[in-house]
Image (spheres, rainbow, N blue to C red):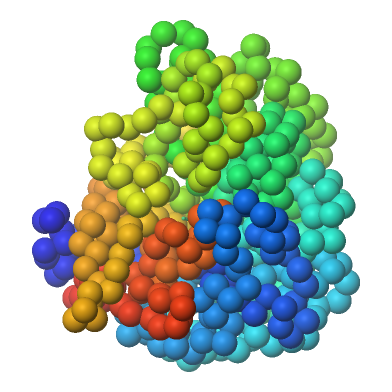
Length: 468
Ligand code: FCB
């Protein structure tokens, strides 16, 4: 047990004044009701229906049934005492076909949700794209199709017009890195494409979509602040030799820099001579596009889960942190293990010092170009069970959260770190892992949908109460 987990009051004193503590979710992972009230089909609905795509064969059709149970879930957040709730708007609820006017029933659902949050004093933080693209757009190529960026700008405008008077923060994209790598390069996430380096075109289109969405939100004069969220993983070469360092550099570019540099600096990073062929779709870009991508933003969202260690040589298995990817077998490098760290249920190394390193990386790389930063996600999965006495003892999650938040706060020098959002409020449908990985502060029984707060929920509740 970590020192912080024993002492919620002491932990609360360590938080800087005004530091936002929130919880985060995503529509596709919690809402369910995928065929209700005229919602269109999403790319993840399609993907999950394909045999073999989801580890336990499950679908997001019901998920946690948040679409119907949101009042109960908001009550859980109110009791918890969080400042803010980061959730995503399901694009196919607002534009079932991916184009055209806003679908009334979709708008009404988020109206009810936002109003209920505000009534309970919880600040609404909206993610516009948390991976659930309307199927007709996916059918036309998804993020490989440049037109999708404009469609996303249109969707942002509809959301801005409907909710712009009440939302406190807008996040355009969630983790374009993961969408590109898992979805378009390796095929472990929707849409299941295995384009390897050719997937990099999807990076440019997502970032263009980000720029157009920021412009749309500004044009609609939304009252809230605007930012983007990416997932950062510090990349460490397993050995000090030249070739391993080069592979690590390529992975750092692919995972981190090709997203943050254009958004914050208005240019793609310099690519190593040896890899120019692989990065060509990001080299031959129009400078006007870069201007669109480089919009002033009010905050930067950084998700952190784990570091990456790169070793040279082809992978000996198709294992990735998010599922099996045969496509990866041809690479000349692989993701090496972290034997020195304990692991989460997902097998991800628990390494809070690398969250500190992420914060320092950002401060060093982007300096004055970096707006205030929020850690927009962080958390861990463990195989939690409800004990006969009705409690869920997830002490490991308390340690995880306490150590990570403390690490981030401790490293925030030269960077304006404003908050941390716990991933996630309740156990949910964890993409390709289905219902196998539990990340919640609240346990969900996926048969009965009963919610049971875990020990981590009570710990965070004590921290937040001690703060005021
Ligand atoms: C992040 C995603 C989020 C969840 C966590 C575990 O990459 O943004 O939806 O799956 O990982």
